[in-house]
Image 1 (cartoon, rainbow, N blue to C red):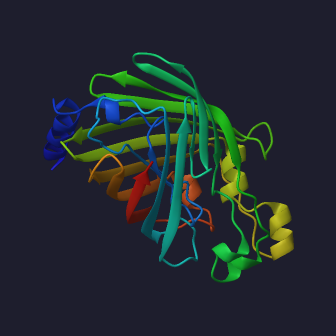
Image 2: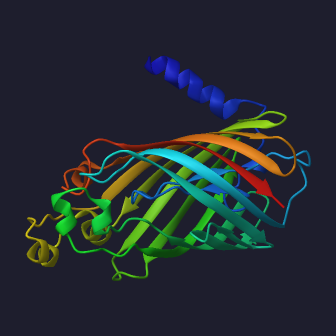
Length: 283
């Protein structure tokens, strides 16, 4: 079984039909960001158009995405949600739903660098829980500012960056790396995005632990997260373009936390996941 998976991975990376012009997440014209459960879930897709080699510097894209979600938070049932998509780019500035925003300050042959600002759904409110955890005080979602980029290596893109929570203290930081690859056809594309994020102890303890002050307010026992936290996330996407304006897509997302986060009473011991369908119209 392991040998079979390895062969599939080698094929995925080495296939000659792969084309990087579709896959830069900093300039992708579609972003799915379906994150009502508090998970920082996102999948990048680039719509395929008849003008495949023409770079679009200005666009606005409107759409809808519906998802069935197995949430990361403990004491919360599985649910479905429908969210609007409003994505745009103007030269080097881009925004995906007003949640993932950035400015590309360097664009080379292989290397792209950008400043970015992200509104994350890592905090929680009483509506996030179904029973005794409702007693916890609200925790504001973080606003992450940072620097990121992508670099072409053969037939894949390597991505990465560092971010700081401007709503927190100086120690609330994250760093991430990822690999993005895909197989395009004439009007159809399959993408895979695998990422690994390291979170500082201050960040994980704030959003996945229960502080002594929160414990005193709610009566729920306090819980500290020991050491750095981490998350592995994988997204698979299949997208189809009817024409240069209309794209349809389906996706599957799974997220796995490090053991020290999974031990928190706020987080399920199992992995969170999401599957969905969507469509966009690009002007």
